[in-house]
Image 1 (cartoon, rainbow, N blue to C red):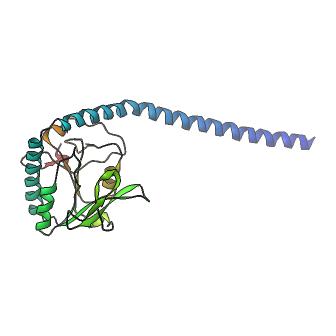
Image 2 (tube, rainbow, N blue to C red):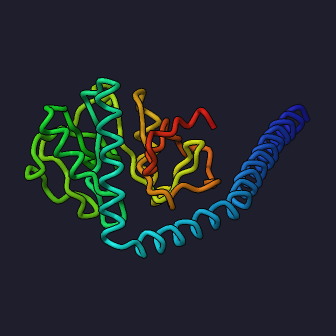
Length: 230
């Protein structure tokens, strides 16, 4: 009789544990589902804005793109000289990004230390590697040119120039959706500047909790816009 009672007690205890685990699992699944459903409108908004911005960028003439690059280059030159910036993370522009090649050549002529993104397959992430000549690059992920030297610590860089499809004055950025620059900016303790043409500066950028902001916007104006002022 005692054995039967003990057995029933053990099975009831196991049943209670299983029941509680099922409840916990349902709660987690419901929470995940609600999070996904809440994100769907934002995901759709980002997708639509990316499509819109890509069309706007593609519609810009070569002359307009060149003028924007030159003006932004002049602003950046003055700013880095004024703030004594020596170590700069740049990007090698893709067709839909603002070309910084003239600014990069200026920095090299001034003996600035430059770094560009290099993809690390082990971490599935980008880091920065030094370069001293635009001819010393190899074809990397997404066919983007990358430095041939080894990557360095982000702590060595004072300033990172960040491309994007769109920005707002709060420093929010719309990228391509891969999250690569978000991961870089999360670990970076220096200064970040978003590089933007005037039409890429929007009143509002939809964001997720993992999206990172930039400190300044260089948007083809007379000076950088400090995002904490807005």
